[in-house]
Length: 375
Image 1 (cartoon, rainbow, N blue to C red):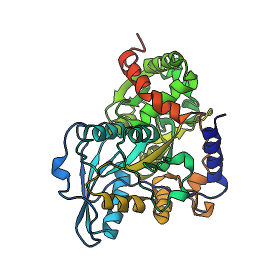
Image 2: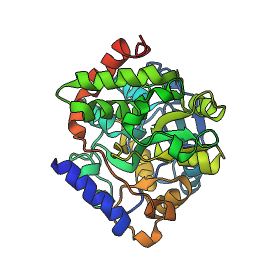
Image 3: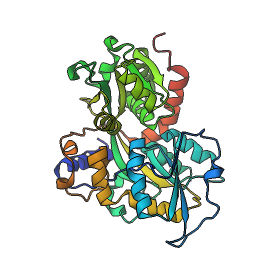
């Protein structure tokens, strides 16, 4: 087994047995939350005119690109604004992959200061392309090496197990797929709805993991697996909201999604959703944050960075928004019962290989597999 996977399993065991701190997420609620923009469109109207360090009492601005769920944004941003009333926050919401593409397109004239909510693969790619600032936060020593960039360009905020989602009014737990290969059973044909893959960091991770588990050196086996899944897929939803709506209406009964958002929809929005943790294990995505290279509001970005990883906030968000923290310094006594009772079994994945291959694999899927599985 690879060294990184050993580290991952040891840490996950630590969640159940010992200490851990909560690297919870925040997605703007106060400030101005904009709809998902075109990834190549400029955001000049939302940018500060000055840069550099500002006095603590001077009005500052902070522009955040986030892939966080609206519920997370609305839970966190007001707390930040209350604590830092001198910082005016503008939040633009888009898919995790769209953030990477937009930050890349704006390299010459950065329009965002802080990237809030990115997959490990996306953040690794952005770091390699020189799109993220190096910043070592005060909590650096509390984040395991596996969940941060060695040059401090990004830090994992939380862990997201990717699981099987189903409509609990239409299916009993035993009727839902129990493992990944069960999704290919003909009895689930036209019962599966998938969030649009290329725009979603979650779905890119799941699909890449499905290719990896069939053999990264021979992706053809993984492509064949995804073709069979495509044959059972009724449609691809535009965005998470559209996905939730279709599942709630029973236009589809099954999907693939991250554990946190499923629990948020179930527990806070009263949606008829539940999940199956795959028997063979789940891709456990490291979801992180970083400061955009050349940020015009660097000090405000650092302030938000520190705020996000505050220990008390991490505990609160684990309890209320089902976030699994990456911090390693919080007693298990402070963890919510749902987290203590969840067995986090990871798939055996080399995340560096996944990051290197994801673009190639997803392009092949889009051009050669999507919508062609039943043909």
